Image (tube, rainbow, N blue to C red; front, side, top):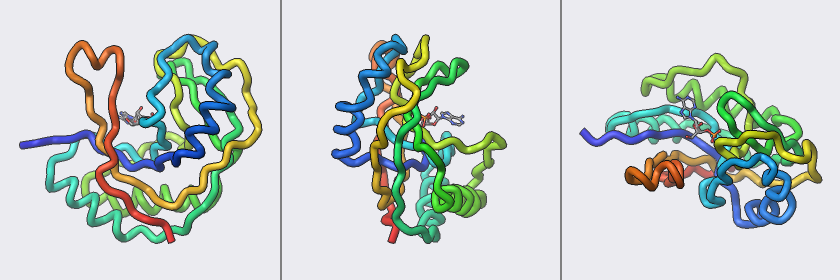
Length: 179
Ligand code: 3AM
């Protein structure tokens, strides 16, 4: 049976991508890792993992139940986690509306087999993988993202040989408007 690796995420708009390119990415060159392709930039909300078609349909059906309003994130923090070797851009704070969205989303997808993480949720955009060092600046002027939807995304591994160089590619399968 066909299986996919699925997760829920917030996707970036063109303006936010351009602002990160122009105002932030230069501080991540010191990380000496692989800068992710901008079309893959996202904020993970809930990682589900391997899913068959029935599970995917369950996730899609349950996600319909989410009621949340649009909100804004202001990205100011540049950081580095040495263990997963990723460098990231994060909002200065996690708005309550996002905390609520995470709690609600994790709850509605539990019947589909979702196992909530015990780790604290830290919204972030991974910009660099295999990073060796931290970004050269820890705080930047705010880069705004207006969040108006959330997405169900498939993580695809490129064919052997390519995958090492490119890493996973992400495809948005479905999205739900916040209103
Ligand atoms: O949002 P980022 O890029 O930091 O690390 C993976 C990536 O995170 C994470 O899900 C996002 C999309 O692939 N991820 C991968 N496997 C995971 C797992 N087993 C995981 N997160 C939690 N548990």
